[in-house]
Image (cartoon, rainbow, N blue to C red; front, side, top):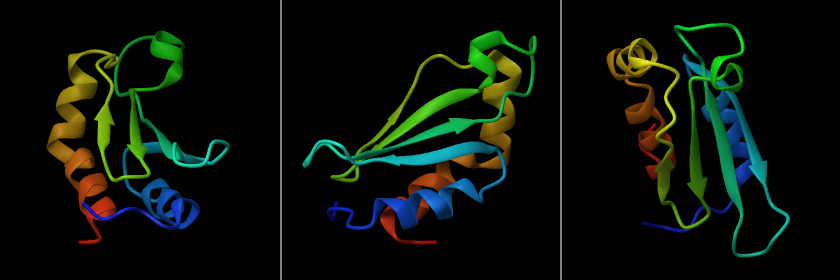
Length: 96
């Protein structure tokens, strides 16, 4: 995978996807830059899982790390149906 060069622009593009609550670039440590993506929660109490469906991390080298703390099965299924993860991967690969 090709190294990502503009995290802020990539984060802005990801933030526009349906099902994405927020996407923000973290650039404090050279070589360890990444994007934190919080997904929308589709079930459960208002504060369950910190108010987010899950967190995805996109590393500067293009690796995508999907957290395992889904806010319930309904949230996981809804994101699968919507293709949220596939859409994020396509943007990271430059296939958008």
